[in-house]
Length: 245
Image 1 (cartoon, rainbow, N blue to C red):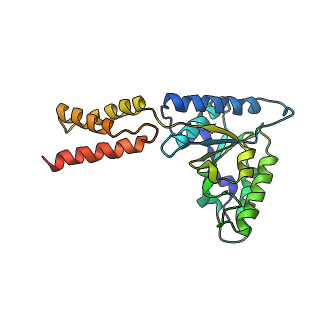
Image 2: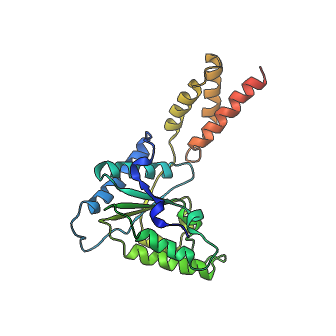
Image 3: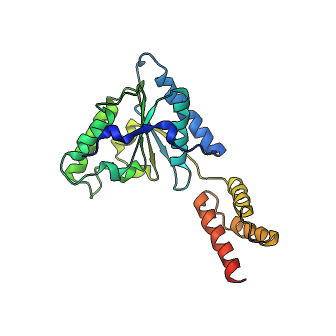
């Protein structure tokens, strides 16, 4: 079984990356929520168990959370983060996943006063119990997860998860987390990125760059095209230039 203590790393370990305005807006709101409880001496009459950051693939959810972890660590030095996904949690041996979840929320040797539990693509594991693929082990694991979230102390533990398809999540999980949506990049945002990326190539002419920029910009579909899409199209068109040279 994985030692949960070894899963925790310094939150400042994530590389500092510039965020878009929409990422920054979501980041700032989530930071204020974490700070509200991390700075409290006692929990008020209610608490936020955690946050579910959801949105379409390529909206920038994972990177936004990484930058959030860095920001929290700036204000609260020595904050540790456990970066999790279903591959880490899921084990074939009965009961191992449940014990691992419990140990992540209550690590035995962790010295940090504050920790972040970051679960990426949580819908891949805690899907709805009405789903035909749900098994006894899955229901048992979800039950342990719900219990851990219900007993979380937000003054010392901040839970955040990402999801591309929040509708697949167990409703009991959805109801336990504050939901924040991250929209797809705007057309203007992508157009600016395209220009920067294409102009970074130094083995094609200025005219060729301009042609590639126009083609990639033309392929943008509002609210559907993401950052990786424009990267792939840039490579496709520049590779085409070399092929036809």
